[in-house]
Image (cartoon, rainbow, N blue to C red; front, side, top):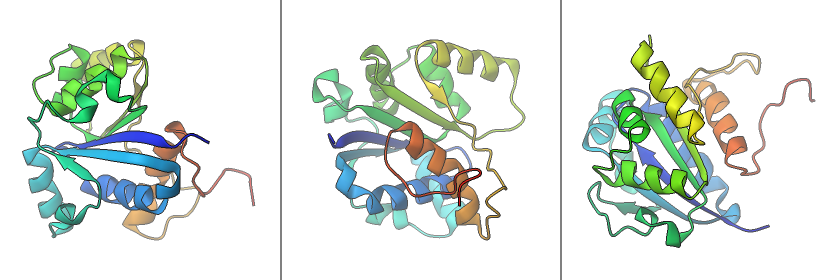
Amino acid sequence: MKKKKIVVAVTGASGAIYAKVLLEKLQSLKDQIETIGMVFSDNARAVWEHELGNRDFEKIPFSLYDKNNFMAPFASGSAQYDTMIICPCSMGTLARIAHGISNDLTTRAADVILKERRKLILVTRDTPISLIHIENMRTVTLAGGIIVPASPSFYSRPKSFEDLASTVIDRVLDLANVDNVTYRWSED
């Protein structure tokens, strides 16, 4: 099996727990992954610290790139990153991607992933959503992106916030074609 090259971007939408669980799971699945490139927005760092009460994002063992570093490998299709996950994805980031505005590394990388017809997964975390958000989701979906609302499921009977977040992140990992042990409906 070919190892994955994945970009993970974290934006300032509420839901840092989703990013935390995603990064922990990717760490545990490193045998399937060649490389992970990371980018955080300024707001993502502030939200993480506010919601999770720590700065553990500073300890992430993946290559971290500045939000304005257009020399990062995944700013070009030639680097052949096959998947990008934006988790959580703010509505502002979604809007910029939908309209081709590549004003930072996150939106440039998303633009690259879409133009190369690779997998873009956006874990949107906002409610309620307006018609503008819906239209932006439609535009990104028509361009090949996958919208994964951060809407946890309950049939696995999650016992903690991390378990609850995992119900979304496990679906994201499935979509990224990363083998992951998780609860499967009607399976023992």
